[in-house]
Image (cartoon, rainbow, N blue to C red; front, side):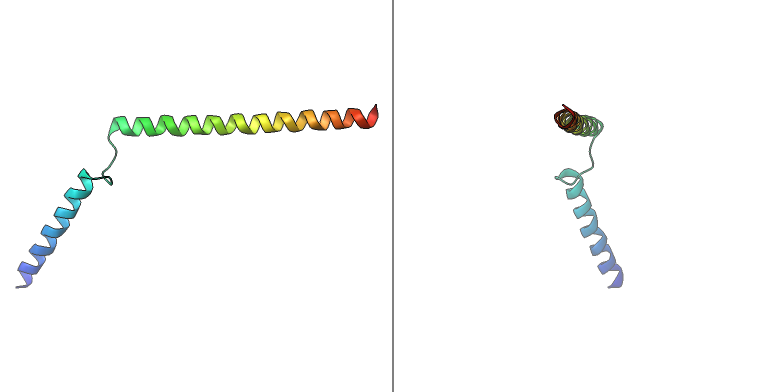
Length: 71
């Protein structure tokens, strides 16, 4: 009886594991992983560009403010 319960639990686990590997929770394959890496890199580059744009804008603002005070 104990052995049957253990085998049943193992069968349930294997069934869930099989479903997970074929469903939305399955591990990524190499092509999907490469796509996610590219997506991450693109997002990181967009963020760097946004930060640079803001920094450049702040430098221009500070320079204009300095010129206005001096001039």
